[in-house]
Image (cartoon, rainbow, N blue to C red):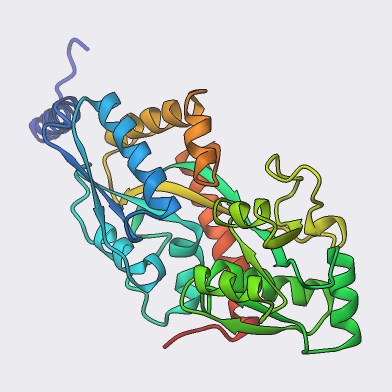
Length: 327
């Protein structure tokens, strides 16, 4: 404005801010200039890994840059998430996170190595999954109602298998016991496959498992599906009721999401989020997701952050009640 002199210091400060903004914009416009790394905190070949590779492939096509999948298994997904949390927030390291790794493990492990709310930038949820409660074909239970009636009549006699303490199928059983008021006995195994083997053999009464691995055994007549854990009936099991139809309020729905280290630049986050949203909402993706037991379900970063926090509270309480913590 004519006649008004702006102090030199303020002029320099404004210029510096303008230059900083220009630098940030140029940096984002030049990204990605090299391949990205997508850390999958589980072994190769499992449902989460297969889905992550599909998402990584499609993300690479959208960004016109290679996305290299790096499997870092251990501690139920915690080791891989540690790598993501401690990586540089430059947009070149991403993580394929699950509810177990971000919202359950902090309650199970005393030193998980990261803070789910402070150490990550949510990019977007890609999918959801639920469990199915199965019992051996030789067992007498024809419904969840019959199973729970037997559990009430014979406390601590009904057994259920899981992939180990703190696993999703363990906590699904813990939640069932607490919300239905029955006493059932947990039998941990080293992996879901071993637990399923004993369910089929009749050595344990039931287990919760993901549909992608349970479905072949159900179709083969080796196990019987009694209930699913979602809020609504699963399209994979349309004739099978949900647990909530008998135990009001019972819902166990897991999720998978893409995350990055904390302090990722906002424009890089927006670019990644847009790409993830397109991948998840493309009709062609549905079959790929469902083949691994997932349902495409996009959530933006802010909603994803809220879900991580809510599940931390919920599953923290379930883990504490189950005494499933590991030092």
